[in-house]
Image 1 (cartoon, rainbow, N blue to C red):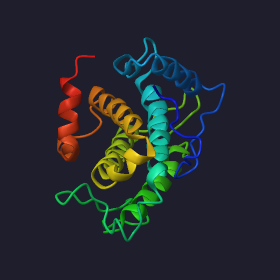
Image 2: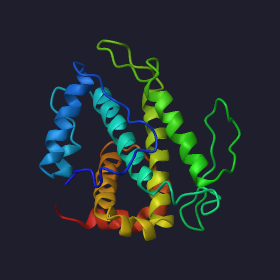
Image 3: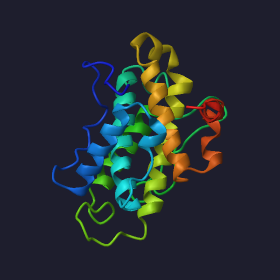
Length: 215
């Protein structure tokens, strides 16, 4: 179910690797094993005896890599000319700010927004003070808020793809994979309450379908 749809598709940004021999790598392997069974509801559950922090951290990396790959499949069609603003239909526009280099939200094209976003996530995941990978390191107080911000912004990438690039997704043969990835993503953020309901409004029609499923 989670086989990469094409060997020709490149990630938008380099994948974030998880070091072998670490606790995060062990959890990553568990996730892969569970996903291999196709049971997404089981895949999102916190394994017994594992810490929520480690579970959120490794899944954040995996979902970043997943969204990175999906956007990479349509990046040649998502240009500043075609997508002059980062949006999900006419009702929802997303402004960019990182609180550091760009403190005041600015309007940018979709490809610029995603470039800012993926770079910001990469830098965040590689910052040991924010995302510690070593065992017995104190978890920063800002950790959960950072994770929530990452997932909120990754949701916007899905929303943009669904609203602006489905005409390309179909011919590329990645629609089924996109739908499965988004279902996995939504079930996870719902399970751990990572994204406010109002932020998910652009894809409420898809969310209603997911919630109505019995499997």
